[in-house]
Length: 115
Image (tube, rainbow, N blue to C red; front, top):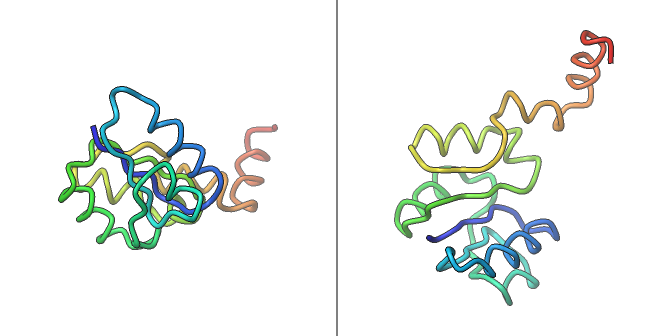
């Protein structure tokens, strides 16, 4: 299976490195990636927020799973966009990502739940 990791930080580097160790994974792509991910995966020059280009890349390269690391594309709805395109993706929906992406939203939820 081919896997696409979205992001360019240390978290994505660790994910790409570990995914590359699996016997079930044929290729690991990281978009956009960084100098560190270049050693363990194939960097793809697509911004983490360019959903149409990422979806097209995933379809063209038979990506069986996309893993999203950064908060910004999650909060912008990347998981919803991939699911709409019938692609397998790991991460919270746009609505669920608000818990991490918005401190005000999270505090309001916690307050309403008496947490």
